[in-house]
Length: 68
Image (cartoon, rainbow, N blue to C red; front, side):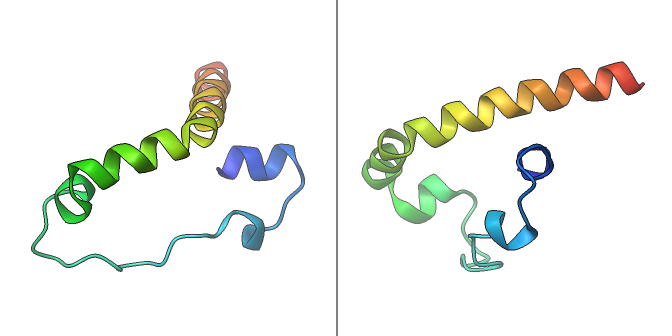
């Protein structure tokens, strides 16, 4: 997200969207916290976001590799 922010000249507010520490501490994972059905629905609904994330994650990894 930081790379996307820099590439698109966005501010930090443009990429801030999750409430910090919003889950209960005794849950091991989001899937357990939300339940498998709801987690699968979220993955399906956010498929485009996930693809965008994967693209920029790969781009970021390539840029870091070039720097190192």
